[in-house]
Image 1: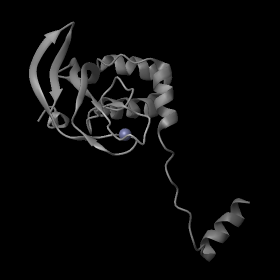
Image 2: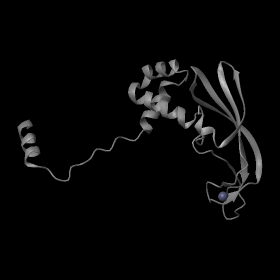
Image 3: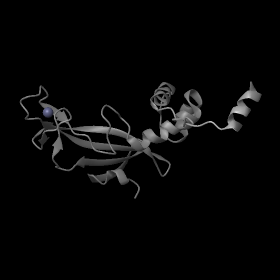
Image 4: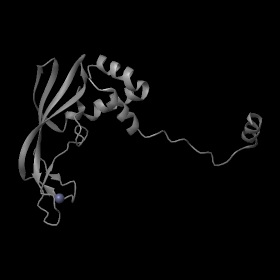
Length: 163
Ligand SMILES: [Zn+2]
């Protein structure tokens, strides 16, 4: 219930350390597809630890120490030989934060941006720089405004009066 996005991985332990709740987890041995050529693979090259900052739990910062696999791609037609697996809803390539935390920080960034946003995020036990918040604002797509297909006489009159 607290971590619905951990359903796809195996949780080995939940331990307190360095003022945060650490969830120690590893991926299941499932077949993954190469991100370049979609060739399925389960041949393990190596494993490594990813440390992901997650949204606070019970007022404490939460970290996910996730063991992920590097897998061989055996498609000879592509140059990539090894790829790192990603877990849907939990890992984003190159990101040190979970999508759940990114969504919270995006909301903070859009509402408060910059310095005040960084201070508010700290109150949520998520240390984030104001530059990171600015980058999150820039990455959020602008809301799509509906363009009216038909203008009525009243719309036209309103515009004229404003003019
Ligand atoms: Zn491949």
